[in-house]
Amino acid sequence: MMGDRDFRKVIKSAVESIGKELEIQIDSKDIQTIHLHEVVQCLRRSYYDRVDPQEIERRGFNELLSGLLRKLEYGSGPKEFAIEDIKLKGQVDMIVDDTILLFRPAATELENPLANDVLYLNACMWIYDKEDGVVVYISGDRKETTFSLTRNKKMFEEIIRRVRVLNDLLKEQKLPILEPSTECSECQYYERCYMKKKNSKQVSLAEMLGMGDKD
Image (tube, rainbow, N blue to C red):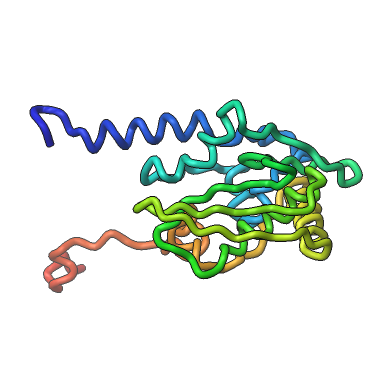
C-alpha cells in the first residue's frame, strides 16, 4: 500500500484488462466453429464458457505471454481445419523455419510437457500442415524448458472426435461428463461440478438451545 492507493488492486485490474483484450474471442452462438483450446481442455469447462460463462481470475503478466506474442508482427494468424460441416479453429504463437512454436508460462521447470499443450501443438501441426513443433515453458524466474514434437495422426484423430462431441452437446444443450484432472481445483466452475447446494431451514439460536416457543 503506497499513499492512499492500493497498487496491488491497480495491477490486478491492469492484468484483467489486458487479458480480456488478448483472449481468443468466441462467438458462443456459432457452434459450427470450435476453437482448438476448447477441445484440449475439459469439455464441460468449454461448455460452461459458452452457455453460462464465469470470469477466470488472472494471476499475473506471465499468463498473458502467449496472447502478447500472437499480437506482435511476427506472431501467427488463426487458421481453420474443416471437419465436414464443422470448422476447427486454431492459432499458434509463432512459425519459424517451418516449425510451430508455442510459449507457455510455468511455475517451475518441467520434466515433461503438459498433456493439453502436447494435444494443442500436435493439432496445430495438422491445421497449419507442418511436420515439427516446439513448446517453450518460461518460469517466473525466466528459466526456459523446451520440448519438441513430431506430429501424430492418432492424437489428431482424438481431437477431431472431441470436436464432434462438443458440437453435438452444444446442439443438444447437454452438459458434458465430468473429466477430473489436476486443473479442476483452479477452475472457475469447480463448485458447479463438485459442490451441490442443500436445502436448509433457518433455525434461531433459541431453537438450537431448546428455548424456542412451545405449543
